Image (cartoon, rainbow, N blue to C red; front, side, top):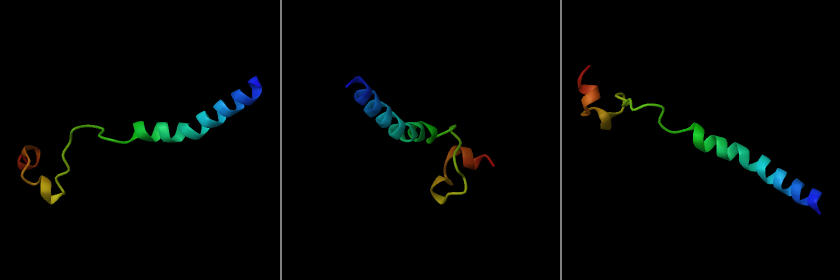
Length: 49
């Protein structure tokens, strides 16, 4: 019974690991504004250039 439970827990952890890693890998790396987009043209960071 313990081996069955351990196998189930291990399988769930292996299946969820890529989703857990992907959720933390994405997102903002820094606060830089993408000035190539038209909606960001009026932002302060894009006006300096």
